[in-house]
Amino acid sequence: MRVDVAVTPDGLDRAAVATSTVLVIDVLRASTCIVTALTNGCAAIMPVATPEEARARLAGLPGALVAGERRGEPLEGFDLGNSPLEFTRARIGGRAVIMTTSNGTRALLAARGAAAIGVAAFVNLGAAAAWALAARRDVLLLCSGERGTRSLEDHVCAGVLVERLVAAEPGSHATAAAQEAAALARPYGKEVGRLARDSSWARHLTSRGRAADVAACLTLDTSTVVPVYRADVDNLVVAHG
Image 1 (tube, rainbow, N blue to C red):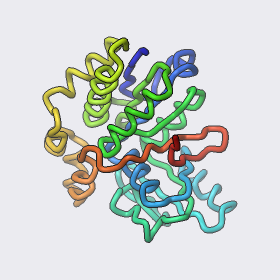
Image 2: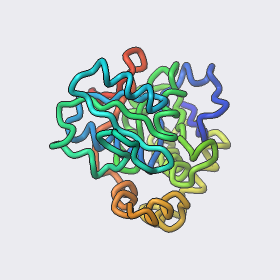
Image 3: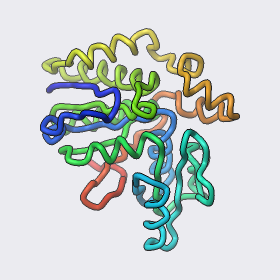
């Protein structure tokens, strides 16, 4: 098994993606929101590229909700922003959610064509690693990044995943990019909460009054749910089996 890391969705090797299990990572905050929503009974999440596409999809899906942000701020007229604290069972249980974000949904759409696509964050890290291992394919850890540049928290999350995958599969091969991510993640160990200080985006969110979001996103293994993206029908649901 080959384990690789892409620090942004740009320039993906399509041939490699086609034979790989891809885990899409956007710690702050789309991945965490998606895991939280499906943990709390959301029927399905539809990732779309733009707010306009989200509104167009909503017109054909009575009862669905629209969620999203740009540059961290909620979108005008949308039901939900991009805070995991908003995705409560009372709010989204049994309902479909159409979602568009600056980075996370872009990465999901970029992964189309992969053999399988899942969503990983710190909150479901162990479950996501187990799901990827069970497929017995090469694994690509796809960081969403921050508008085309590296995101520290995504890169660290990928690095922790590399270490778990390699430890569980002794015959695996970590690429140079995966080894770099693992080395970056090592000092954080189980103290991923340190990213609240070290991540520029975490500091930005905190400055905007969203420290509770940051804290919720920087917790390990609070959910066993792995969202899987079924690209053929454009939605994310809970992985089974």
